[in-house]
Image (cartoon, rainbow, N blue to C red; front, side, top):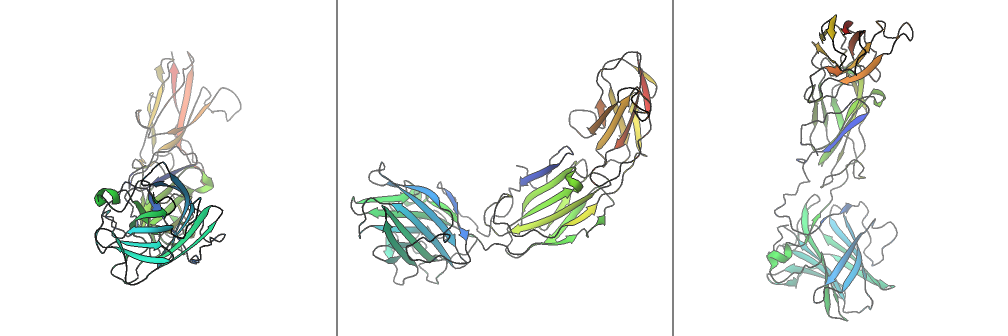
Amino acid sequence: MVGAGRFLLVLPLMALLFFVDPSRTQGSDSVIATGSGPSLTTSFVSVPPTIDGALSSGEWGSPLSISLNGFNDPSIVRTGELYLRNSSTDLFVALVLSEPVASASDIAEINIDADHDHKATAGKEDALRFENGAVDLFWQGSDWAADSSQHGMVARSYSNGKYAYEFRKPLNSGDSQDMAVSPGRTIGFRIQTRDADISEFFRYPPGTRGHGDTTVEWGKWADLAIATPPVSTAPTLQTPADRAQLTAMTTTLTWSNPSSTTQVHVRVTPANSDGPGVNLILGATTSLRIPPPPEWYGLLPGMSYSWKTRASAAPTALDENSLLWGPWSEDRSFRTPVRDSTRLTPVSPSDGGIVTTAPQVLQWNNGDPDIFYYEVQVSPDQQFGAGGPVASVWHNLVHGGLPNRPPNSWDTPALAPGTTYFWRVRPRVQGDGTSVAWGPTRSFRTQ
């Protein structure tokens, strides 16, 4: 990972920089405490599932496979599939649970640490249980107690050795004894079931309970991020203007984001995908500065680049393959300034100098400090092959800003004795750019 505002050095083949900015906003939740349990995330639904005890095809999406261990005998394990969804107003949980023998006295419940401090706080925690129907619960200080008002729905069915439970719990019912959260928040979360036939409780995350040392026990609960509605519109690109001609090898991209944006994905692609590009996921920012060398060895001269952005309202960090991104913006382009060879000056070896046959360091200066990628030719042929195959020609692409070596330099292979070599340099142009003329030709002779 790379920190915010830093760029990686890449060689100008088609190389895209990709990193997630670790400082980006993770939704609107101000997390008070993070427990030792798993981190979970719901998926936002525009069409809520029907709470009828039957998980219809396509209704709940993909499940998370879980295990629930026995409290009195941890060697007894129940396996299950957990589904987590939410709308703008409700949390939806479905649990498919293995159960060898069904009983009317079996129960299942979802427990919610509403203020997400992983502590049992009277009047601030919420639960919904199936016990011969829906029972709305709140934490009254030492145990769960039935709420005087019912908020939520639960349904259950049993088939082929499995229970199917479906829960709907309002995110904010208005009842002071219920949770009051909104999409983008994170809550503590736990599941508890009871198998009446063997008088055993089963919990997920494993090893959790509601009683005992609640500071320790509630710290093991899962962190559940409530998803925000997906972004349905693209960011609006602002500057630079489409097809802008840059005057320097740097620019600042700006755009405006849709409401509820928590993170953006920015891509800058060179013409014909020929050169370094930018592929960044950032927080809800509205600008990105593309720095010049030596801050970032990226933009090449005399060619065009396209750029675009997209946004998401997801409360947790996404990668570029996530389905929670909104649509891409339009593509815009800009063009970098032309740089030629008129400010190139060969430095060493001196023109006409005598050298050994050992590999030589060719070095040059450039009055344009924002150029870092060059073509270098070396040959005993002063025409560098233009007149036909007279002698071998070394033709190399050279990154002039590599660490641990002289700037703007290239090492020749071992040289033939008693031979005059000619060499020249020019800025490398790629993509849809046009190659520039070579710089001055210089020579040296081996002993």
